[in-house]
Amino acid sequence: HVKARGKDGYRFYSESMSIDTANRLNLERDLRLALERDELRVFYQPQVCSSSNRIVGLEALVRWQHPERGLLYPRDFLPLAEETKLIGKLSECVLDQACRDVGQWIRDGHSDLRLAVNLSPVQVEHPRFVETLMDQIQAHGFPPQNLEIEITENVIMNDLEQISQKLRELAALGVRIAIDDFGTGYSSLNYIHRLPIHTLKVDQSFVKAIRSGEDGACIVNAIVAMAHGLKLEIVAEGVETDEQLAYLKSLGCHQVQGFFYGPARPADVIEKTLGHIPVRAVAF
Ligand code: C2E
Ligand code: MG
Ligand code: MG
Ligand code: MG
Image (cartoon, rainbow, N blue to C red; front, side, top):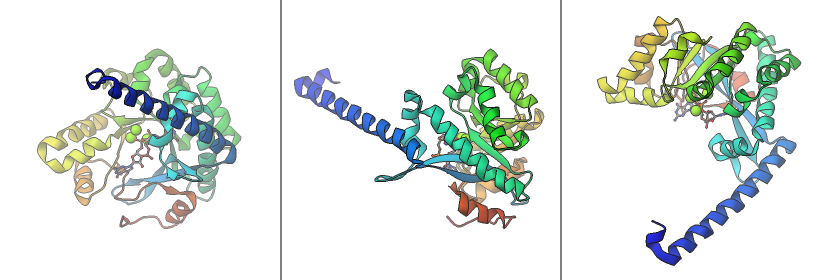
């Protein structure tokens, strides 16, 4: 449609391209500085046992406390980090903070508390991924059996042979493996029983669909049934309402995560919540 708008249309297009480029360069410079100035924050979202209301895990979700633009979310900077290789430093920074925070809470007596971290494809595809990850958690004395890594189906399908080797090594060391956004990727079900997977995370789009009645809920039904059959743990993501929670419980989905129990929050806030298990659903 650029052509249809003639010369002006084209000029408009190229101007907006150069603004994008300038923005990108600014953002890239800012992100580089952010890593030096320690502006990245790890927020934690509870993963809750739906029958006891107890926190069983915390998912680490990165935020950027930008000096001028305020709190930024992953969608604002993660794609750029991945394109520019800043993702390596970013991931390292997130895992360091998370091991420090959650490691402390584990030592404080929450000994089964699970830390879930999201890994980017670039990270997993790195030849020394396993060594790098293990060195880093060992530096904090973080127990591998309390760590769950979250990867997506697409990362797995991208290079099944390499990835399965790496996942096997990690699983042998005690690290748990979760498939994030389950059901939204390639969805080749063939790999699931060939890989050492512990947890399926039902994507929030399927949880949202519960409210639209029988048809909407059928994918959640199928995923939960499959997880039961394969003896996998299951975490439903994006649970916001009583109705969704009740429905998921009735299916036998025991772990839930979402605004119903609370969004991701800073470490000092989460620490107080941990002191008060079982948590009650918070108004939000
Ligand atoms: P994800 O791992 O699937 O995380 C779930 C996202 O859903 C988070 O968004 C979370 O804040 C949001 N969420 C949680 N409960 C609800 C709910 O009830 N309703 C709705 N509408 N949303 C909910 P967030 O924090 O913006 O993160 C987006 C994505 O960015 C994550 O999706 C993950 O793929 C990626 N990400 C976040 N932190 C990291 C990180 O440290 N490293 C890497 N590589 N990726 C990360
Ligand atoms: Mg995740
Ligand atoms: Mg997800
Ligand atoms: Mg995601």
